[in-house]
Image (cartoon, rainbow, N blue to C red; front, side, top):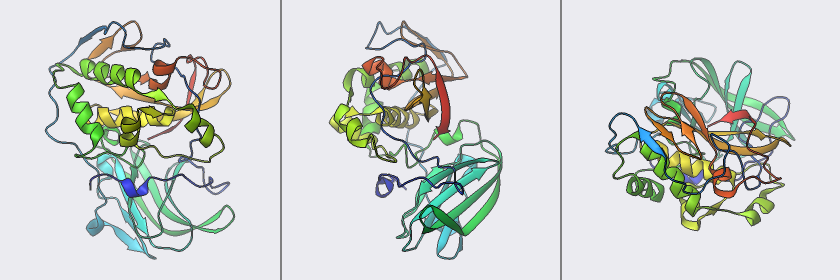
Length: 320
């Protein structure tokens, strides 16, 4: 469906007892922790290895498939691509709406436009029964269900949700971030080189935006725009993570955006987890094959700071 541009906006206050909010991220300061804890720069490049790599011929996209959606009460929920790691929803209402994705006792809640514009969000909690619900605000933090669909999900792979765009990692075939990622990795021979080239470029070219962090410090949420981050050359932690994920996913590299807390003061932060079939080992970082490895681009670009912690202890909360 191309980019999900119309869905990018600040997120309203979290639902309280009824809903556990997974779409809220306040701004964090500069710094953070990389896979091995050292601050970055381009470094010596290190060594890479692994099977031969070639760029995908096209970007794997996500889309809202209205023709397959289940409907009711002016709502539509499209579960036709849950095996590929995403679900779509749309609704029409004059009240504030949320789209809730839940499995067991874990829930993610996303702003849903009331004008019928669809959103696409990850199915990111593994295999099993999911409940997808459109929720309408009644008063204060109270919500009621308008429409729901229960689906028993079997993902095509563990990595599937982290290979496609969603509202927090927004890109398409014509995105500037995709073109830049292809340019940076045109001569790469393995996936370790791909990650290295993207990492080193982001670290060297994106500057932490302290003014933006201060402006968003009291906000209840923020949704990044990878193309805007690329164009401005600045961003906060969520911008770094979204940009890195958009670039890597567009190149066929599974990449998570994770939000959570870092030591020593439990400051909210965002970083990436990457999964490759090769390895990249350097002074700054060590990524081994066929496992998820933490990559903190904000820390690598800026170094440790009192507002983000020392980069040695991370607590995951939400994954996109």
